[in-house]
Length: 168
Image (cartoon, rainbow, N blue to C red):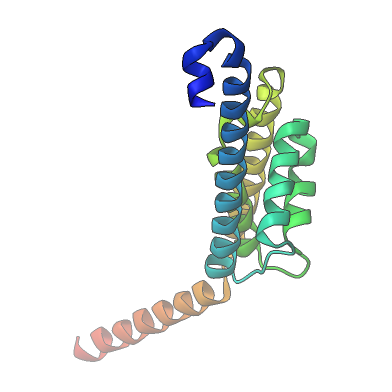
């Protein structure tokens, strides 16, 4: 092809651009598989939740979400296809939404068609909203460890009051 490109560039340009387009698509798919693998690892390490899908299947799901322009209404469905969140703590749930959101944000923008970029923004906003919702639920309901710490603090404060009364 190299000699043909030099000899008759106008005739070979179509094949050259086709080869470059194939290379670009291959690179996008490979990077998507890498991003999916990182998501699987992060979910397992940081939340203790195994992904339902393998790295290739997860990459296909992420690429499908981008190509189809999944938006606001699809955030829970996307996370539901990746993880089983039944019986999972609020903290793990929120962290899972955050990891999926960060992953979707890391996918290259060229995966979304120009007219579907608004859907990407809506999907990211919805994942952020779900993450924030679970974090707010945590703030309202203290964890078992936080309740235990509060009891310890109150016990120590009570013991200090007794000591000051006995001294005084």
